[in-house]
Length: 335
Ligand code: UT7
Image (cartoon, rainbow, N blue to C red; front, side, top):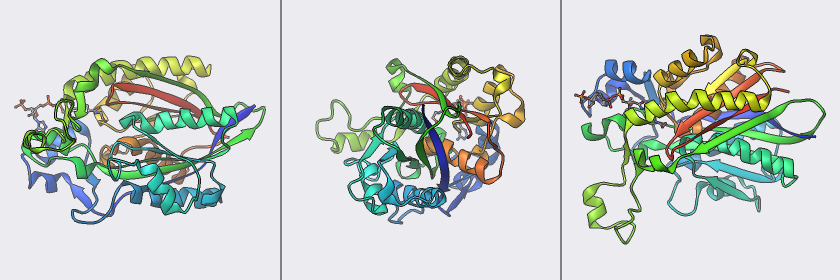
């Protein structure tokens, strides 16, 4: 049977570090508030004025992953790019990355699923591999959220959370009788909650994408009803985790590591408590990176691999929830 195996990982964040105290200088917040409510201690943002976009961060993470897999860009059958902060509105960043990599003629696909973009990407890559449509795939999650944030007190809830970064994985289809690779994936969506986390451009009633009215209303900045998203996350994530475990045919105690989306440390702690999973089995790095949306999970996976915290046979659950509303995850067994 064909199995989808993660051959290698890579990550990249800009070198410009932004501390909570830095933010407190430009809007009404404090290091204490941000740490207590979110767990975030600092984040990396591209520098204002630098000509750097999401594809540039993705390029660095991708080069590392390709290098570690021993693959050339020309070896790829497909590039899948998960981002909600593409370099330009049209086209998506997938083709821009493809060009920068020099992966001539390799098809490139963008996924617009926000915080669950990379997770959906894992399922999509698995489907391509299972169907025989692709064997070697580069899957990237990358964001430059800082370019989209309004750094004012009015929008401080989003300003302090979101951050920039990229993570990439090389996924290969392998023929084997062993039960390894992607074991299960489960996803849900509820567009009833589309308004709780959104950026309103192009606005439905505004006519041209950008006009004086849209500019005046500043609807292009992200809006988040944080409390509602928080409550939905702590309710829906444990439920979908149980669905995932059942589909993979394993018990919670069989999990060796959970890599949750890094939206808020308190969400991940509540998830851990509800699932009764020991602290050391839930990986968090939001403290250092903030919420890099589509990039949180591949960045965390790359760190885990680098630190030697995963071994052959380990069962890893990747799980998340975000704008849409979309939520779900993947269970992966290391070869
Ligand atoms: O990855 C995408 C998915 N997103 C999420 O999962 C986010 C989920 N939600 C959250 O993480 C939290 O709701 C937040 C961290 C965004 C907000 O935390 P909260 O505990 O829900 O705070 P709140 O929105 O209820 O605000 C409490 C108070 C308010 O002041 P008053 O009305 O009590 O006077 C806010 O104005 O905290 C104020 N506040 C802040 N104060 C200092 C909101 N943001 C900030 C801030 N600094 N950055």
